Length: 386
Image (cartoon, rainbow, N blue to C red; front, side, top):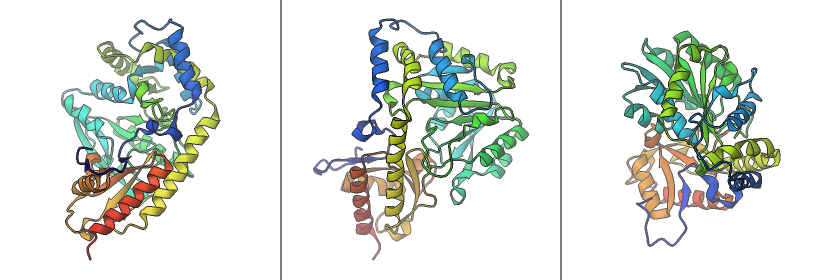
């Protein structure tokens, strides 16, 4: 953002982040707003909460997630966190044992690398395959794992790829993890934000095959990332995580961590139980139309190609061909010059582990998206080799 030209009077178009809440078309439901107001005005939730979260919220989240599972979760399976980012921190903290390593997707969400690195937990990258809809390269997973590997992370629906994994692929992931003797950490913060042929299938469906830690929040589906309410859930009907003391470790970590605001926790049952399908459908409709717009218009830009049409979340990954450009050597320089000359912010792929790729967010006002794509096209034409 600091590379923008202050003399450019056009509004800056942010196609580089995952927070659409600033745009009127993505305002959360009034039901959620009313739930927060009711909770706050009750004056019942001004004190500290238990470190694992208050029971009504945990029960409501357990019931909500159980709708998509072949077994029923208990409130004791649910641990509330300050957004999904704290759930990531706790997961990395729990498994940061001397000599241990964890397998992370590339491209992925760089917060995993940051948290693992901070805890001295070695991380190894397996590739996602763009030609196969960004599926996990399971052969690479098997090659990377050893006796010190504790788990693998998947993000579904995908950030940064906009992918949605099929039931069949998720089952193969579960079977591979079982074969290797590791668990699966499934980041489902974009759960249910799907708008193509593949429905959202939670990894917890395969919890009887392999133990799963499910990470999520209300941030994306309800468009309220600033409310900072997330969860870490043990989707493990066989009780392996309890037997191996992983659950005890989660509780110990939460005992020395901060908690989500108590009045936000108290609003969760009302938010989950009363939000109507109309609100969710409206959000999905906007995302679907925006995904179609960006996929179609990228085709008109020679130096950028999209190997897979986005099916979920709020992002698309596109490949940047620097050999077709004058005076731009890579994705970093591309994004800096784009910000300075067009007041258009796009995330360089280097930030998510893929040099000479770009991650574009399409969860913005449709008019802003159209304007941003026009600026992108003009910029690419201006720098195209003659």
